[in-house]
Image (cartoon, rainbow, N blue to C red; front, side, top):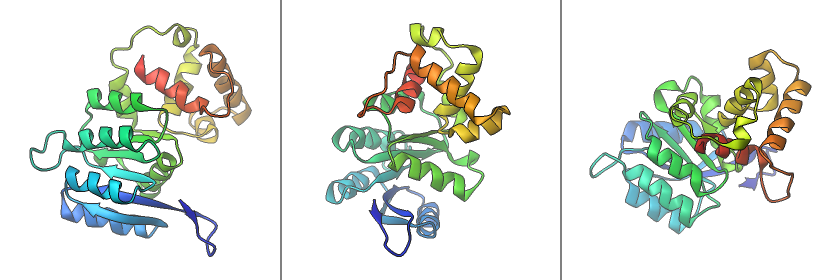
Length: 225
């Protein structure tokens, strides 16, 4: 991302991979109106990987089902990007939740990943905000994706120590919400949310470190369990 001297907001550079030309062009136009530079908009996974290799963006917006088989081409390309270009964020934007691939995406590294459902996006600001969060190193997961990933949780000793309220807050963290947003959703004061988040880090044995984003690591523990 580069800083535009005429605007203090950061411009995000993205590649869009979507086989529907109307939707692809629509996303490109929408992002262009919100200080997001679309460096490439392509119709299939092969073109996506070529575009990322030629000029790695800050993030890639990837549909799940693209030519030629319309099954999992987008997700396999997303996994390739996560592995080969760890500095590139990946935002999967789909009509379906593929839990197996979603877990793989989350296990590749901490942060720079999102999974949103097309039918559940209610505002442009929500989509653009999620994209910026992923490009900045965070996560953005639809609540339905979180629900399906947690449908059959395994036992994690750290997670088992969390209170009901702490698990509720960790679930909202998994959606990419800030402390302020969590406080509003749960009708708590922000300071109370901060104390709960600190307690979550302690119970999950996540000491503060310069290189690790504890919020992301906590969310990954939660989703992998």
